[in-house]
Image (cartoon, rainbow, N blue to C red; front, side):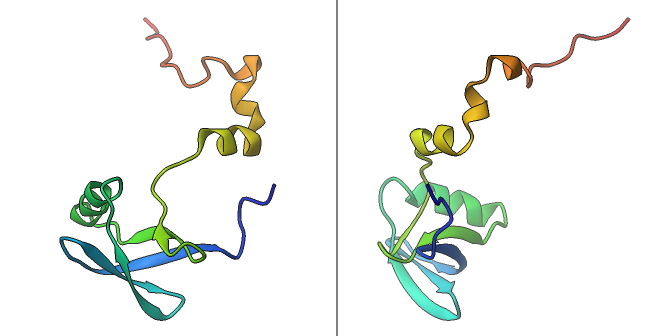
Length: 94
């Protein structure tokens, strides 16, 4: 599976409205309607000073959700028993 394809790119947020967002994608301005699932995320990103978002050129939408099946297909080591607990906190040494 090719996760990185020509359909996906990065959009620069130029302006955010209540119902849509103005992005610059590959040098062109694009108005993208905000949906219920991405509206709050876009507002939070801008408040935090993050102005780059993943953009699906084919479907003309901002990508905010990660498909867990795709993640496991791309990174099968996430299911590895050898890595289980690898991100747990280490106990304090006394």
